[in-house]
Amino acid sequence: MVVKSELEKFGLHPTTVELGEVDISEELNKQQKKELNGIFQSFGFELMDDKKSRIIEKIKTTIVELIYSEQQLHVNFSDYISKLIAHDYSHISKLFTEVEGITIEKYFITQKIERVKELLVYDELSLSEIADKLYYTDVSHLSKQFKKITGLTPSHFKQLKDKKRKSIEEL
Image (tube, rainbow, N blue to C red; front, side, top):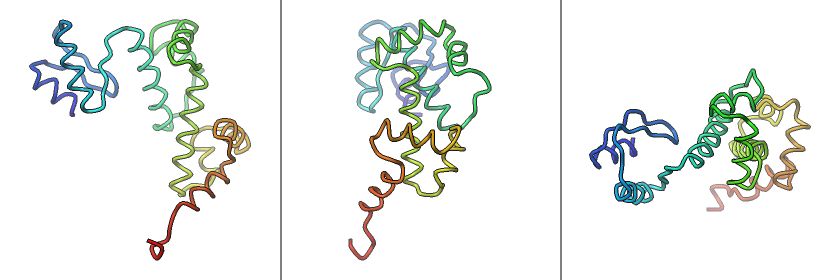
């Protein structure tokens, strides 16, 4: 809503405004792009105009949406991304690694582990339920990935979180 509002204040007419992507009917000159970038940066957003950046951002957005929607893919992840981005996966993968310094797969796993950490902090689901929710083959697989990424076991991570919490009497 903020993005749409700011674009309209700027005198532009957005045709679509979605997570990470905006289409406008007007062509912008360099000065207008610079001004818009300044406006968006004040809200913590970044204006991306080059094709590489848009592809990378689309990949990242897609991964985060997949993880948070808890939607199970019925096709291979690489096929899904290729079709969505409309490029060969090897090209997309090489571009992503070149720009981000990690592979798409590593980024996907890292984001999944961030979601696991979030769910552990909420403390509403068991580790087994979290594994099911995020389509891990089993708890062991989730635990191994978690330890590889964080250096901690899920139960140790949960204990650390619990130690930081103070009871109301301690406040």
